Image 1 (cartoon, rainbow, N blue to C red):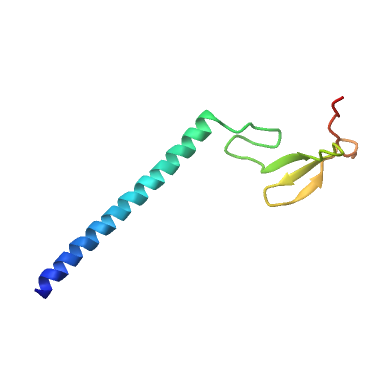
Image 2 (tube, rainbow, N blue to C red; image 1 turned 90 degrees about the horizontal axis):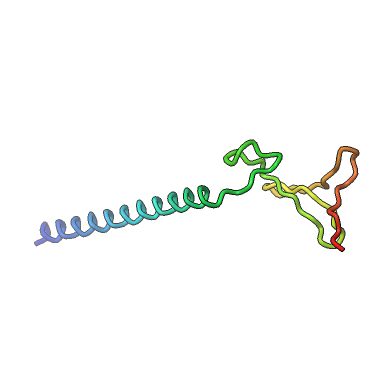
Length: 96
């Protein structure tokens, strides 16, 4: 009786592990397909500092809505004023 119970538990354990493995495989595959489709149909625009779509510089231009002054922000959290060639901070043109 004990040997039969052990075989039963081994079979149940095997099927449970097999089901979990299949679930994780499908989840990973769905994530990869979703990422591919998103990048293929809705690619993010490339700007001046990007080498290509796959090699992004990780910077974004932020504009202060009150003053119109522009800043560069990095994906790591750094921020600095955006300057022109003369060293003056860039300001977005105000709409009248």
